[in-house]
Length: 78
Image 1: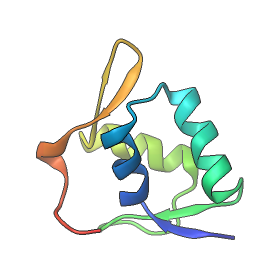
Image 2 (image 1 turned 135 degrees about the vertical axis):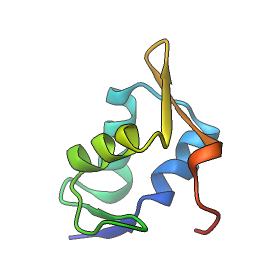
Image 3 (image 1 turned 90 degrees about the horizontal axis):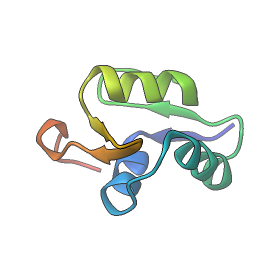
Image 4 (image 1 turned 180 degrees about the vertical axis):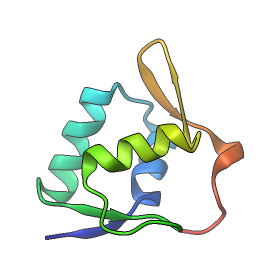
């Protein structure tokens, strides 16, 4: 099982705003179906929990169905 920092997903969204479906497909292709994510505050998040976390903490903005990085809410490390 892969353990990935959430910044990998955020870095992707910075360059490639995506629908939730596109983002889920990209995550599965990049990291596999059993990936778990870490953030600065949380560990062992699955994809569903990560995507909820990103929205709840305003790390992303959803406009016209596309998820965009909210740069103002991102800590400055990789």
